[in-house]
Amino acid sequence: MQKSNIQTGSFQTFLNEAGEDNDTAILLLHGSGPGANAMSNWQFALPFLAENYHCLAPDIAGFGLSQHNSPPSGTSEWIDIWVQQQIDLLDAKGIEQAHIVGNSMGGGVTLHLLSRHPERFKKAVL
Image (cartoon, rainbow, N blue to C red; front, side, top):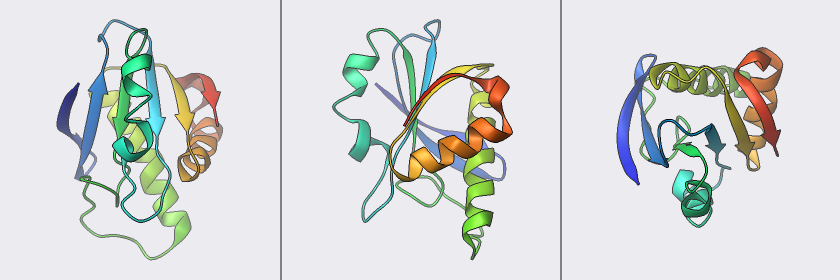
């Protein structure tokens, strides 16, 4: 598994990545709560998914090791940031389409991604 920081807009996104670059990509979005981050949600699933998929498990902005330079005060502003963060991440990795899995809060972000950018996703699991 690779861990890296990827520039997404004006801030860095911490990314856990597993699998082969040429495999179908799957974007895994974690839930919220104290100490929530990508690995707290996906650490046991990633090794199995990486056998068949190029897995991208980012820490959503404001969680884990991802930063956000000027956190907004409202929920709708956060959602806009989270949606754009994922699109910027896919663009930075050169991924046109991916499957997407959202857990809890990540499921809400997934629904917004699907409504705003349906062309970027093949299948979704909530």
